[in-house]
Image 1 (spheres, helix red, strand yellow):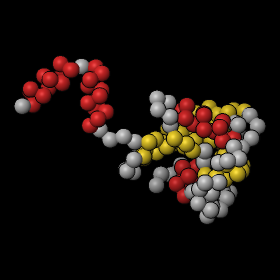
Image 2 (cartoon, rainbow, N blue to C red):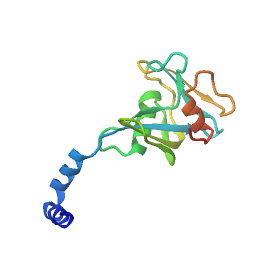
Image 3 (tube, helix red, strand yellow):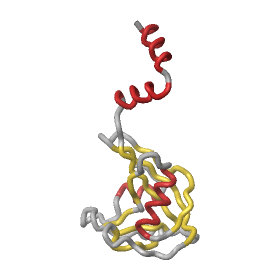
Length: 150
């Protein structure tokens, strides 16, 4: 039976194989977070309008668009939410285990621009020293800033 399945798999090739894989495997949204630092080592935090009132502060975060490289998600999200430009660096964290979501975090460096927040999503954007984070910062983001994983 295994040999027959293997033979059939080799025969269908290309797009049909991809369709079978697509139908038979789980689908996930990918949340991408940027740990954006400036030349002084400060980290960019945003006060989010739509997050819980007791935990409104967090890193720039958004969902990847279909076909988008995760590094490009960070560049896009930071620019959309703050008007700032960043260069993406190393992968900082990858976490699965959620029902429909995968979390990816990258280090990023501020390279230019002036803060112009998206007033619908973002109430405020500020730079903080990692040792002086505001009250109400998401715990998972605090750990990312400090280089720890949860």
